[in-house]
Image (cartoon, rainbow, N blue to C red; front, side, top):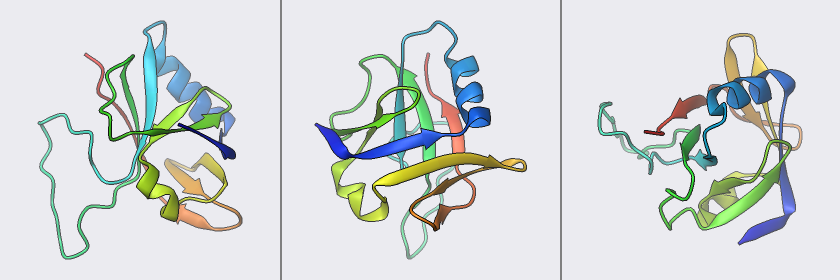
Length: 122
């Protein structure tokens, strides 16, 4: 399902990084905020708050688990996410590079100051 009242805008630097990573490989873009997508290699730490880790994940085309049931339009293509995560997002999301970090912001406020950009394609 597409969220018509939401959008994500990637700034020029982040857009360029993602497009270079994608190259000519058919790719889906996922906003994963709870570590649902996992490559099996990294250690996942959990504390009393659980796992909240905003990440932009590149996956193979048509390889997204069904739990990513919603799409947001962006300036570089659709971004998949889990509908329940709407409570953590604003209607107009900006993902931008700030120094060496990539951050995600909503309407006037920072949502997360350091999000990862990862590639799980095989």
